[in-house]
Length: 157
Image (cartoon, rainbow, N blue to C red; front, side, top):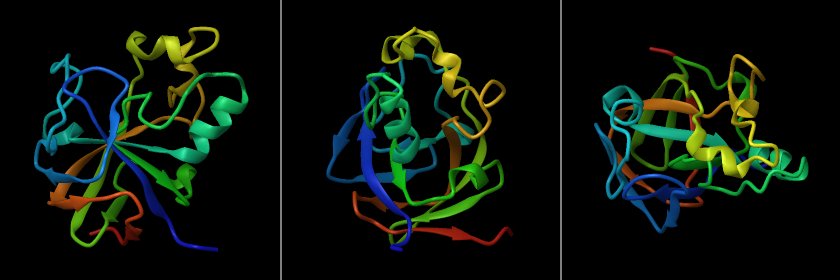
């Protein structure tokens, strides 16, 4: 079985969906070219990068939710990670150089409700459905991230 990889890198000037780009440099405050409409609840060093698994997106789409990579606002769409084990404290190398550490599960908000058939965006809330949440991460080491890049789970410090 092939290892984990980056499926898509996504940015927007603010809001969702975040749209695919060929590459983006990750730095302390997130991906170059990415912005947030709500800087109280999004962004900053502890919420610099949002990640979500394509396997979860595909499963949600199979349930009838019109979700696709980037729709839920993730910056990095992953494939092949054991998403149930991606939790606060998990460290990941994205591509050759970028290293991130998961800081928390994201709290979904109404701005993504239209991507859920019943409008119930809590479908991806960790407290409601453990293992189905997106995660926020801080950037420990910057670098360029591209679709197809390998993802390596690193040992804890």
